[in-house]
Image (tube, rainbow, N blue to C red; front, side, top):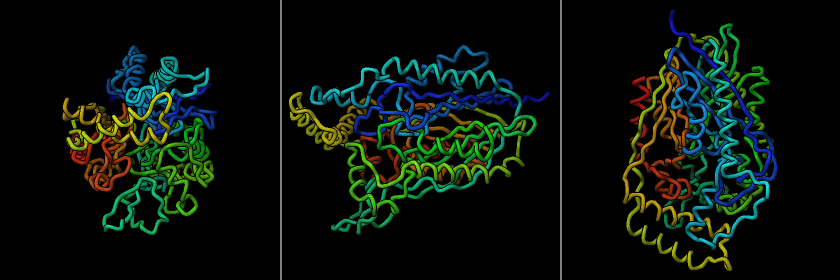
Length: 485
């Protein structure tokens, strides 16, 4: 008898019932309320002794430490290799890392009492208690998916939905040069173009029971969930709406969202919102505090969710006609080594000077404001990079690759600029190629050469561990692994 594909699904709320520290902005935020629930969804797949479990989390990122804790919690399950579990995040900035406030602690380590303690609520869910909460909920979903596997089939299809837009407009300056500004206002007369392209492709992996009934769908969209990102509440952003609309169209199925490569994308069209958000975009770019855009954010999320659901529905007939119950199935882990982006000595000296000035300026009596902390972010990043590059010249991580029939899902820990994924898709042998980012840890943005030359946040050393040289190498490594599968 041939080996049978077995499929299991589970979903679990990871919505905290108490305030938490929110992640994703340079200014600190404590959740004030739950706007909509956040979820962990697990899809378990196996054929004989080959298997994997894909987990999607409504979080901005997952730390390697938290992923390790969850793997340890499920490691005793019969037949389950915990290393075959991938953890991917939708990159909602209205969620938490379920651990300590490492970002702010970094500034306190540099400026000491110059960074005032946050006024935190007495019932804050944080530290080890938050970690235990997340581990229990996420591990529970994994185990239910694993234990609930039953014979089934899979198929893939692709459609289009306008979700992501390039968020790095380019402006011509008086000296004839041009530079990029993340979230720059496009109504500026110096606006000339966008730095990079977009990807409106939607990849969908459908699962079916032996009777041909749809049981779930994993949906890859090249855009982070960042409509609501500037505010202090819990939200799954547009994915909450997308899940609801997919179920309206397809029935009460499981939905596993995947954030595909989109380090230079966001879900708001800057061309169309700039004229009514001139001051708001300037504040957004400053990253120093909460900003209210002149937009109905719920309406934006709902429209995006409807577009995603429509793409999944339109692709469904092609997927239904291509169900495989005995697909080619391979899962592998592969160590990837990339050169880190380095800084030169002159920049390191200047960064050290800026840090020392800040240390002298900010004290308990004269504490740093959010604007001051944003100002020190870049020199601190350069200083830290100078120290790191004197210890090592490379960054290593364990990538994951899954072949299912005519599709390959690949995973990386970056906010990967979309151009790299387009190159991988164009040259890969597989018919359907998912390039899933923000998986199994967080390694910063991975920008293009054009982005580094353009400047602005998401292309400077403080927010990029790997530069364009590493991006070129990543493309070739991923193509080699995908084509070998």
